[in-house]
Image (cartoon, each protein chain N blue to C red):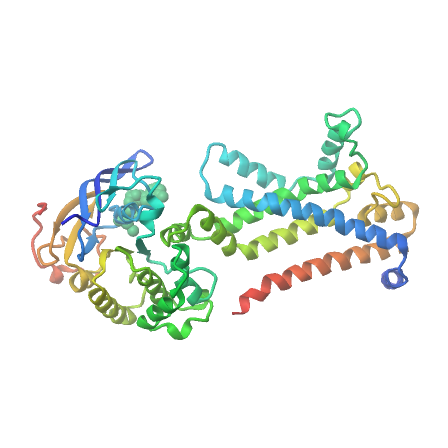
Length: 249
Length: 232
Ligand SMILES: Nc1ncnc2c1ncn2[C@@H]1O[C@H](COP(=O)(O)OP(=O)(O)O)[C@@H](O)[C@H]1O
Ligand SMILES: [Mg+2]
């Protein structure tokens, strides 16, 4: 199967340092890839590279079999969606925020209805008319997820989307998110620090450290070593399921 | 304090009696400073947006120039503009010296860095991730700039208020390049200076009240515009 999204021989430098150096990484249809690794491992950098938001210093990003270039980056971006840790809503109503992506992509007809459906799906349709900057953190992130799903992306890229939500609402949201992912069959890449999220959502796990891929496998296969201390506190010895062999599967 | 009350009453008398000269002075003040502010807005907002977001060679220099320009003394601007427009100056052939047009140019130079600088800082207060999010939503370059502008619209209005407030209150540049010619290039600030010099303190005070009315009126209108959107 051709991957939906892939990177080949990419290098990203920050100053003189490498912060990402990956020979090969791809996202196949229908899978949910969890990207884990300590702080500063390069997870966010890989995600924005995949999202065609920050071009790599060298190497290639592929959308399907198509090379992503400066010229077609916008077209490719319009087939993806990104959710960051912060909701990043604009100073406008929640509905306007949710419709915005569709409008930018030239979809006018039915855009508002679609946005409302997704707001409802994430339980924030009653806030549609409210200014997005007045929402609580959890509500805002729900709106942000609705905004992303309304775009019906070929690949949904998420950078620690649940990290700043309080624990109680987090579990509920993760469950809702899971059911949406499953019912829509959305392909996704999820950067996370949370072992529970990996277990609940991922079909494949990729461990990133110091800018390179250290291990890869199903969530059950991947063990989380203590020295990857950047991983969330939830990852304690008891949640370690397997030993680390560092091999690439 | 009696004096101030008298000045206030005199200001009202001048306005209500429709004093032709006062009206022409006030009108020119609004025209000159309004035009200068408008030009600063048209040039300064794109400059501010661009300097805040884009990375290019010489950016630090330009940002430094904008920031330094925010504090340019009007008298210095007036002097430099006068040097250019002086009959024997490089732009003397335009014949703009001692005209309202020259005042507009000088005031634009004063307001432009303020509008650009405040716009720039408003954009820089946005989360850098917000720019990525806007692009990720699928914004073309034009859509991107439009959305950023929309996001900082309150800051831009503040920049406009600051720019207008600065140029309407400025006297040095208007005096230097406008020359305070009666019925032609006399604005409120230059006529206040004149009346003070002549010892007509009550008239000077009355004119100063008119200046405050205008300044407050325009700023109030902009403030209403600025605050209206936030009540959603
Ligand atoms: N804008 C930047 N300027 C300089 N260094 C950066 C920048 N963004 C990230 N880095 C560096 O690149 C590395 C990878 O960062 P990031 O992708 O954010 O890691 P992660 O998301 O895994 O925590 C880190 O060492 C970080 O310090
Ligand atoms: Mg990160």
